[in-house]
Image (cartoon, rainbow, N blue to C red; front, side, top):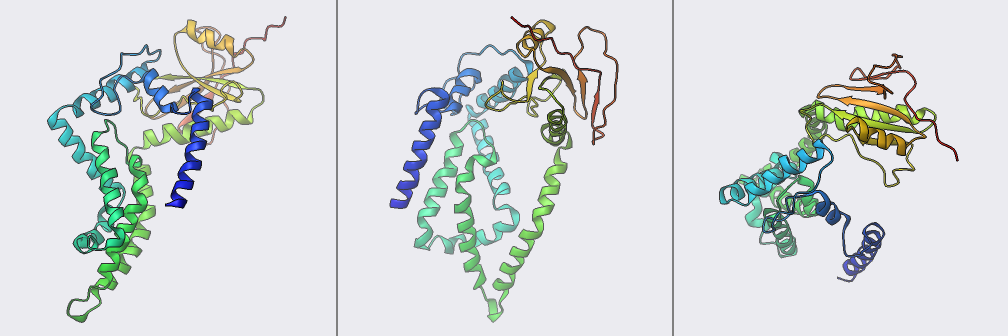
Length: 322
């Protein structure tokens, strides 16, 4: 217990320091501030909804009110709770052990008799059961039990390894096959994940990274205004920044009406201003127009068929001097 207490004490102290620097309170997490500021649906199913915040952007409003809030309301019904909890457990099974590593779990009745891992079984069961009362769920929410799952699978493989029906080492051969298949499936799973939703995968990763890399290679500092299509899925988000937003070379912001765009452009008056138009399959980077007329086009080479960049000198207001 001493090493565990030492690790938890140091970790808790550092996290408390981090919380105090961000929120002003060592016991108030930044995530709590996020939920209080933007979230209407609470995180646990027994909590009551918050008052609807004032959203300045359609993408944020759609995420919190069209995706999160219906999920919370569904979890509050008996049928919805049973259905969503079943889905959670299926997702945990598919994401962690999966079909291949389920085979060692078939000897769980023998594994349960091992006193050395009984505490792991209890801790893992309690942790996974806790996901049932959480409104939203993503597989990495139970990443804390990864080591427990691996330990149980390995213990099951130990029992399976000594299985010798009629004196034949079938269990040994089966365990070796499981290891080989697991290794071979790694690139297959990576390929399937990348192919599962090419538009989303590209939107939140490669296309944005290409644009960011190109702008960071240019002189000066930049402001990128992102304009979504009307039916944009709010999950593949383009707009996020580092902790020191004003100190970043590239700042990302959501498109608003011309008056509010002008306000942020005045704030970042020393930056070159661009606009990115995002749809399901492509992203186009242009110089932000000073008027409603389209700026003169000057093509810039970009190593991607799904990212086009055009426009003359980006719009930047001259810096006022006292």
